[in-house]
Length: 411
Image (tube, rainbow, N blue to C red; front, side, top):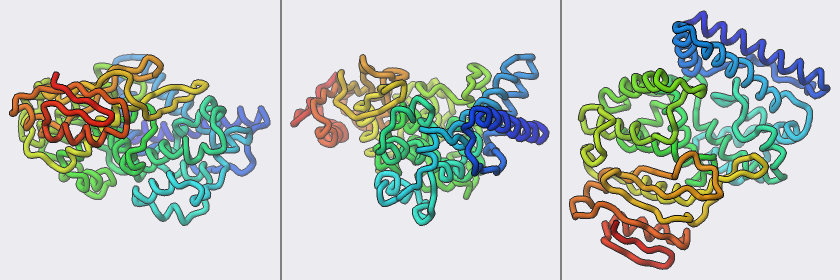
């Protein structure tokens, strides 16, 4: 495995040299280059090496496709962002981060526990290059079509969410639970740092999985393991870490995605593993949700429900091929299915949802309300200001409720 990772480092370096040569030939290579070696997080490199070895073992051309994607294409795109002297990339990545003019980003950085960054003189490029994946990957939502659509407010408006997500990943070489959970936990901690205002495209699909893990193992314990301060096996319910790693590998073998992650639109099976492990039950993710031992309610259940309702009110759309997310009253009713522990609604006709929006309903609350003979509701919203009142009615197990901007009825 060490030989494979060394080969990755060599090919990354070659990929960057080729990308810089292309920029130089076009007269767009900046003069002051960051020549620190490109570097993959060790956990990512190990996962990529395992996938490449498997593909090579069966004689699949996907082995070369994986290497070409991560060792050539990604460095080329990163170079186009950080090494180019041409606008709009240079205009944004050379920009000094004047923290007093970036209230959203600065507050999120502080909530992440990274206040020391606020005392440094940094450009966007310098900040990003220090993040876990900034050592070899391009910054999300900073591709040419994105940059071309941004105005002067972009640093706080459009870059805050992707930067906070990358900062939430933490140190580059910490031990990973799995690549998919790494993204899910960065999604969850990033959303918390942004005070729930995470405008990354499709973020709730990932963050709810990270949130479920925090719900069953405890936020502080999961955060400590995510930072590499304690072992995952010490932080998680017995058997859960091993089950996640095993299922992640089996999931790769079944679907073999280029991104090496699980299908984001199928979060339920991963969350089910978390709750089954917490109950000491067999880790069969085909278990119906209503048969999963829910245990006692916990304070995080209210957070889960609040995030579920907010997720139903997100519109994913594009401006000049650049993704945007905004909050709006959902165009269809919100359906709460307590048997499936699921909050869902129809996708908007004008959106780019990867699937009709869906989010976990807290299982312990679902079990309590089901015991009263209620299997679910339909929630019709006419105002986002009604979300808190609607959430309280759901937590109370109201048979029906009506307020200014919402109506709740039994299914």
